[in-house]
Structures are given as C-alpha cells and as structure tokens.
Length: 148
Image (cartoon, rainbow, N blue to C red; front, top):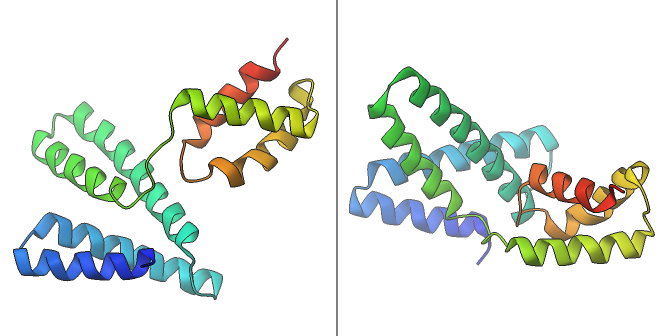
C-alpha cells in the first residue's frame, strides 16, 4: 500500500472514530500533497509526499516555538499532537551511528577531502538519507567529517 492509499485509509478510520485532530491533520497532508501535485503537474510518489510532510513538521515545530514563547499552552498541545500524527507517516529516523557510517562511506565513494567537496558529498548523500534524517543534521555531520 502506498502512502496516498494509507492516508486515505487512516482518514476514513479517523472519521469513524471521530478523532478530530487526526482527521484534520490528515486532511492537511492530503491538501498540501494535492497542491504540490498541481504545482509539479505530475502524480506524487511516496518520497514526494514524505517531503511535503517533512515540510509540515518543520513548520509545526516553528509554530510550537512561537506558541511557547507567547504562552499559548492551548495551541501548544494541539500543535504537538499534529506533529506526532505527521511523524507517524514518515519513515523511522535512523540512528546517528548509522548516519555517520553512511556519511563516511559516501565521503570515500566521492573521494572528498575538504570542505570544498561538501556539495558533492551532500548531493550523493541525500538520496540515501533523504527522509530518514534531518538535512541540517546531515550537513553538520558532513562538515565535521570533512574539517581538518
């Protein structure tokens, strides 16, 4: 079952159980995916939908920080619940040890030797780690590995 079918199935289940937050979150995912599909003028693959969801998680985490700073505890709980639902549709993140192993392997494959090769390493690395790890963390770890 692909991700789009899973979203539809979960949406129907949320309707039956009257889970309003889960239902609205899944509807947001489907709506954002549809907008991206229209923008790209093609049917989205699972990886594309995962990228949309990752973007929604990032925005949700930024909103969470704003709500915490503003003292809006009512919105904080709702945002946390939505982020958890969004993350449930993403692949499980890999451990940092596994990430470092893949980064080292990719550095050897690309024969990178300095920070000048960061772009080359990241280009080769992102298809391998795409939805499984945060891009900022990957970038930071690659920089650490390439620094003298």
